[in-house]
Image (tube, one colour):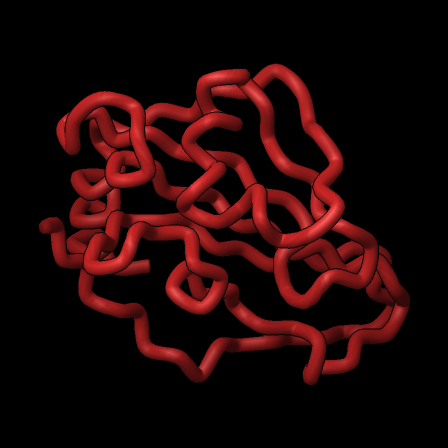
Length: 139
């Protein structure tokens, strides 16, 4: 990663706070959406999504206090996708989009982290996203 991009990304997350001590299992996608994710941050709870749920397997809420007190307008997320099989179907591997998952309040957008973790691969495999990193716009 280029040094200038790394510095830019550090600045975007400079005042961001993670706060969790445990995971709670979600029955559907509603906990990761903007209407509820802020309450999970207050409880110190990260979200473990349903097995085989599309894209995201784990969500850790992130608070940006410069956006005000704890609310749906000051919360973002770390989105993790875990792949554990020996072989991988590229159709099921993708960089998650916070916009598609309704992480943000309508009209709001904060920096977020999206990662794919591949475990137990038994052959050389490389997946590169064809998506261009989006421009972060702070309200």
